Image 1 (cartoon, rainbow, N blue to C red):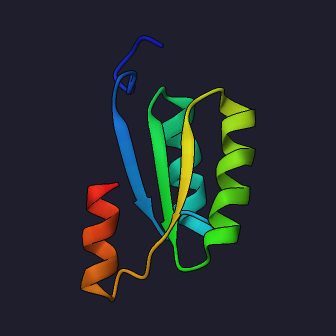
Image 2: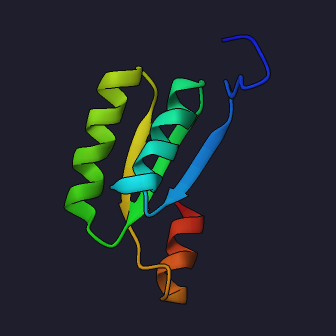
Length: 80
């Protein structure tokens, strides 16, 4: 994809990415060429949404359970 929003080769991390605005942001990043990791407290929902976005966009999208209010979970997310 060419243009000012070409994110090919980039990776986006979207917290709260399983629904609402976060999901829409994750989808937009993927549609503009980024691979995406979505994080939310509900791992099963993240996995489902990641699969849906990957199928819709052809990008690599992974889900990861993470509560951003817990430092140990944030550190694990950063290491992923």
